[in-house]
Length: 277
Image (cartoon, rainbow, N blue to C red; front, side):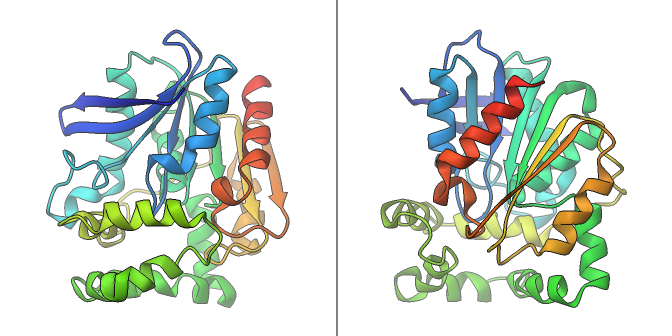
């Protein structure tokens, strides 16, 4: 059974889905753009059945009560701060962290800045940020793949374009790999006043000030071969950015939307990783 939660923090209350016993081993799952916590519905439900306490929040900008207007309030420090604030509110001293897309970037940074809080790390799609930065400089393929980021930083223009014609451009981002009913739900959420701007502010907040180091937390990194956003150069280089136990899993013929396109495969790999650490 999936529960609906509201998690109050100093920044506001985060909406979340959850499953599993309150005293189960805690797992926090972070969604990407342009999705929401329900991206993880399959994983949360399965983890709950297995006795874990799985919680997936709608992150900053996606939860209506945590939707600051300024792009500067969506920097990586604030996003990582939200993760820790949510864990603190749930009473979790140590937890397993899972992230996809932007949620994956936040998960990498959380593992860098708060390693003592994490029992394990699982990242889907998103390479280690230093590996991605290096690939964007040295690999023409990755540079081209990341071109959309520059476009999405253009205020207002992007919102109008994405939401025009029944949000056709926003729908096309999913490349017909996500169930239509789920896409409808994402579009409905992001069509609320200010919601799409808040989600795009993650791109507009500017690059993190500090440098991210190697990750010592036990890490599972899942990358899919048909990912349009992240190429193989950064994906393979991620191994060089983890000093702790590391496992790399490549899923063939699956797009960027891994958790929803191949939910059983992702859940199986995640459970395996959790049970071994």
